[in-house]
Image (cartoon, helix red, strand yellow):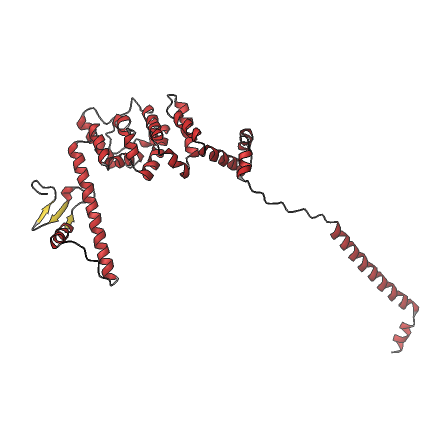
Length: 336
């Protein structure tokens, strides 16, 4: 312990210790002061406020401003400007009538320009605005102006000419297919689609060739023309127009109507059997039919049928075999 006492009594050691502690305190104080000064001098930017484009903001944009935004390098800005323009066009009935008038002009370039503009604004909520007599007539008129006088005969069953058709025809088919899917073919038939365009296709020279080529087209093709014509053919008024235009014979129209009825009967019968099996599997008794015994016997007899078809042709009356007292083929002479 003697050396420790001598060290503590040494002034050099004491002053060295005091100096070290003082320097440490000064360094700590400077570091603390500099840290606080640094934190106080940092300028924190204000977070940007989220801004939404309101309807009032959209309406205040002038056409010149929207035209400038359409040429902007930012894709999001261009897309927003395009949506604003399309919304304005969709809410303007006068503009829609102008476009429909434009698709009926003789000039090819003008028709294409108006069709493309109509396709841009044709969103689902605009589709009901096209379900009018004026719109159907304009689209059919555009198809009529697009007829090819040098069209080849549509007799090749293994080749589909639809991909090579004009762009104006394809765009018209897109509009008509959406309208028919939503509202049915009645307005399309009333707009004389069959008389003004479908019957003017080159189906052949003689009436027999036209009916045969049209039948084969409906049998082997799968495009928008076939789907539109098939929708027309499935209605009684449509079949009458097809017969009047020479694309179907009266006998062929009657046979097609009978096939449609048979297919519906088969679907109804299958649905009844499915419901019966479902009721049995779920442990429930099917609801009794409020019919007489004779009607139940006839219904049960009509359910017993065999369909003989190898899949290479549509199901016809000759393929359906019903059972009465003996098996008979539906459609045989003398059979009903």
